[in-house]
Length: 155
Image (cartoon, rainbow, N blue to C red; front, side, top):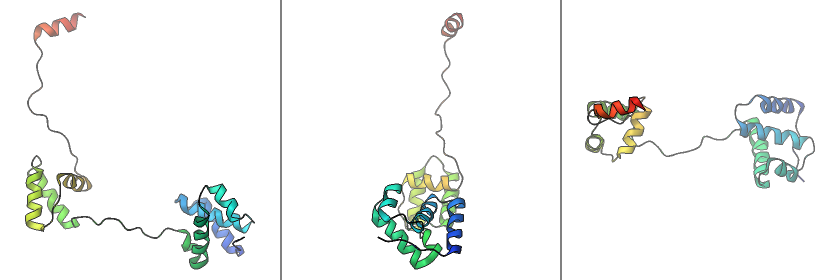
């Protein structure tokens, strides 16, 4: 059986984190440590939280190694953007010039920045820059015949 033994100031800080943290994962981890300090076993905690026992053990290990900082998730990696901020600003200018021809903008990006981007990527970049995307109507709306309008008004 593994339990976490806390100092009084650690217990106060964990209780404060459990009540006030904006991150639900951090609140759960703080609660798990407090419950372990109160005598709850790892198997009881896994049942309570509905998680795997290794997860609780990892929480305990992180707390023992890094203290309160161990409750928080490390920054996660993700896919890097295809274009830098400066390049995205330039793409926005190009899209403003020719909003109906994203393929032309994509070819400009390929020529100037030597990077291949799709139309959908261009749309995401432009939306991220604060522009909205709307479909353009082609032609004027159809006018109904006067006889049809009279029938509609009678019924």
